Picture 1 (cartoon, rainbow, N blue to C red):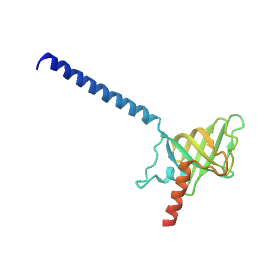
Picture 2: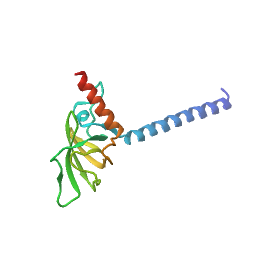
Picture 3: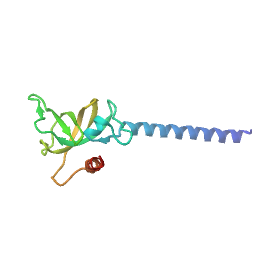
Picture 4: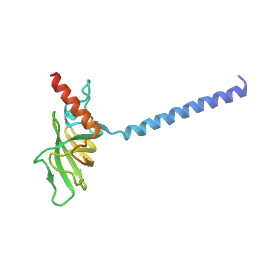
Length: 153
């Protein structure tokens, strides 16, 4: 093999390895920033046909309704604990910070956070729907799927 072909071969191999490393780093960084949407029932019993449950420490978004008489405020901090429910289950949520003005009991919300225990989420952001007619697309689809599943059973 002459030196010109060797140089081209090294260049192609080096480019291929660099491309593979770049793609691997992109996938690694995206993996850390993906927030999957779950309902309380999907956290407790699994999601989809395979009933896949989120793992402890996984970032996620959870949508549901704030349960009546479940909001517990900390008198000295901006910390609040509450329960979210849907038609299949109830999970606990802890949040420290200023809540949206529309946050209240029996209000639909979406919380972004990390699963800390089997049914406890530590939220870093809480979003409340802005009027009674609006519902996040994921929550609407999950409720419609629950209704279809209940009709089939």
